[in-house]
Image (tube, rainbow, N blue to C red; front, side, top):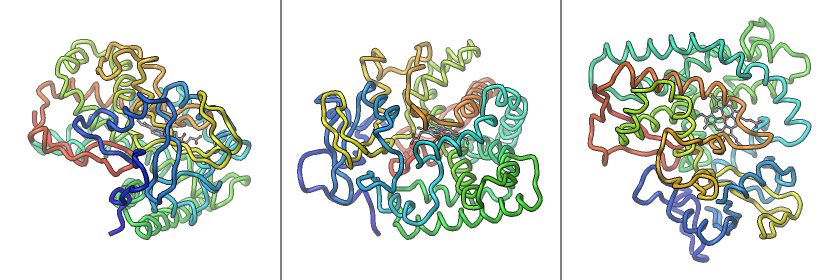
Length: 405
Ligand code: HEM
């Protein structure tokens, strides 16, 4: 089969993307660290033989993500794609606002900001707590050991986002399976295209129904607006559904594994539950699950930290190395729940900075605090070495996490 990662890079010694993790499954790939030691902006090679800029420094990532001379619109020539499948998505579908710039991006995003402000999310906490407790009740009733991903990390954010959007949770097998294909850079382009089409058809049908019979859910209100086209409603629904469950699910499972590997840190959290807010920020920083780089393309020549990036050249912002940049995070390789991690880029930066971050924070805080409080004896049920990581997925994490208690 067609595999993005098996395409050999024979042209030069510049790192081929994405690079292997090497020894530590939590640390950025050694090739990116090596690049960062050389300079904050270096060259790298993509699967199709093209080059792009690898941006590894905190200051430079911040510049790229907040400067409108860099575009998020994948239709611009030179936009860096991580795989044939990622390119396929652009050819086939109406872009969501994640891949739009300027006034059009702002118009679409503005319609949704009210649903994700801290005040609204705080009001959702009791409901999130109940979803978390119910999932744990079911996992505990099923007996030890259990797969934490299937029993807890994946259902919790899926239930929360379904509730908010007005998507029937019964369909979770369908949308989780297709989301998995969309985010898999090793999946052949054709499979990615099919998954995309099936999800788009599903959301077109769902939002179409809501347009005829409006309800009070987020997608119900969006679909009923006269200034939102059917294509836009479906594209926004797809973005929110995929972004709303995959990222938080993987942070929950990988965050749990990180705490199990650092029992002294887990003990800190158990002794002092108020630490959970800072703990979640530190885990977001240290794990940087959006790990393959945030793509942008320069639309004008830009001097980026002393490097000339020309119009039409692609850049990939590596938040994993930026989040461990010693200039901002001293001893950044150390997981330290007491650290002030607030300047991390786990949610991106600038106009596209994660819309769902208050929701993601509330979910992670409630999920991790509750998990370690209710199951103080939580431990891995398999040898650490046998855990399988999501190296080929746009959102990093573990495929499954067998735990006992
Ligand atoms: C954007 C990470 C949870 C919705 C982003 C971006 C990152 C990110 C890095 C920026 C992408 C870019 O600049 O190209 C995460 C992480 C999460 C999380 C690590 C969980 C731990 C969520 C949730 C939602 C969500 C729960 C809820 C629906 C979005 C949306 C955007 C976005 C809509 C696009 C914003 C825009 O383009 O203006 N996220 N996210 N995310 N995220 Fe999240």
